[in-house]
Image (cartoon, rainbow, N blue to C red; front, side):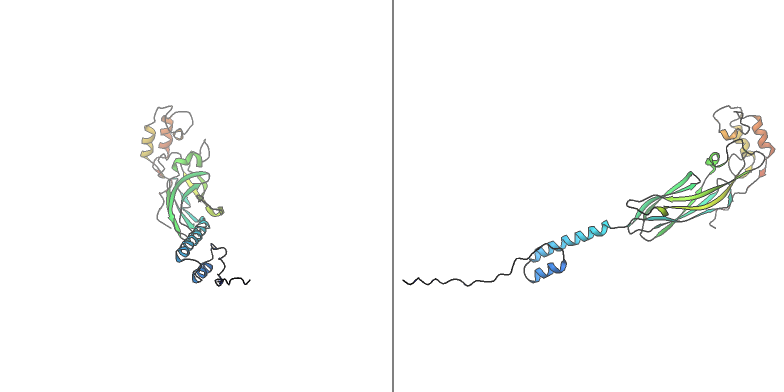
Length: 250
């Protein structure tokens, strides 16, 4: 008996499903769109993901590096109250940086300032007028001091930039200038380079006291301010041992 004839539909060769559809290669994604294996909507979605991923990778690899490139201090011989320091800093990284710059004299922290949003590759010079007079007890040798003439000591001026987040190279965050000479006479109580009536007035305010006065005013170290201190100042009255320095830029 003959079997009935059954007509079968022709077989259609369909293209294979794309492999690794979410491959982050833009050329591959564009190829899928051209072959109609990826809808335009899916294409835009994948492309957006790719761009965000690459942007995040770029930000993550940002370099952070600040440096102090120069320090200038003058005059070479000056009163404690008249020290000028210029500090030049540079952003050697690839992002904007905010950091602190501190000026030191030997092991003393004198003053500081903040540099805000310094652009990559740019530099900035900060100008400081430093008053070392409050530090004279630390700068000059311990008492008994030299009384018959001014004292001169050398101090090293240096500057430091604080480390920024992610910074690896910190060796150039510190810069040493060298030394300048500080001159001061113990009878100059206001640090103006002269021994005059102003210093007498300062002593008169503590006259007869055995406490509550600045210990530097007790020249003979007997624990009080009396006629002996007045006599020391009177002996060198009207003496100008150092003119206030020219503070204009060199």
